[in-house]
Every structure is written in structure tokens, then in C-alpha cells.
Image 1 (spheres, rainbow, N blue to C red):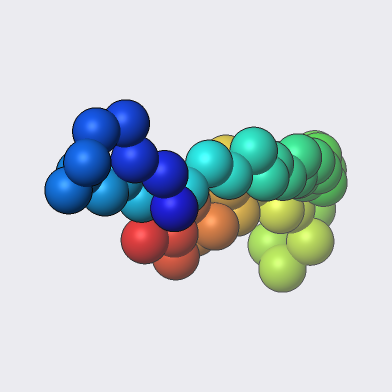
Image 2: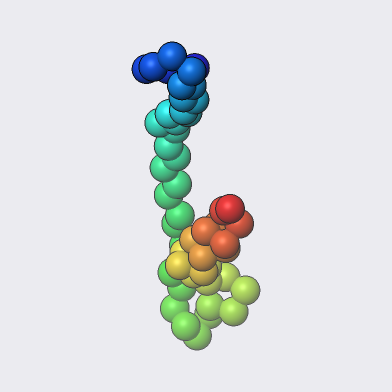
Amino acid sequence: MDGSQIGELEYENFNAASAKITVKGKSVHPGYAKNKMVNALLIANKIISMLP
């Protein structure tokens, strides 16, 4: 807590936390892709949608 004048009170919170997430997909020939290909963009979209 901090204050600059008598009767004044300031409270602040500084948070420099960060996270780095790497998403890797799996590229497969379209003829053999069923149940094998993983789209990295769709996975990243799911992760972002879970954030507040």
C-alpha cells in the first residue's frame, strides 16, 4: 500500500507474468488424413477460447 498525501491511500498490483505456448499440428496428405490430421489453428482457437 502507498499514499502520497495525508488521508490518501493507493493500492496497486503489478504482475509481469507471461506464458509462451507453442502449438504444433500434424500435416497429412488429404487422401489419408481422416483421423490423422491435426489442425494447429483449431487447437490454438480452443486454447484462446478457454482464457478469461
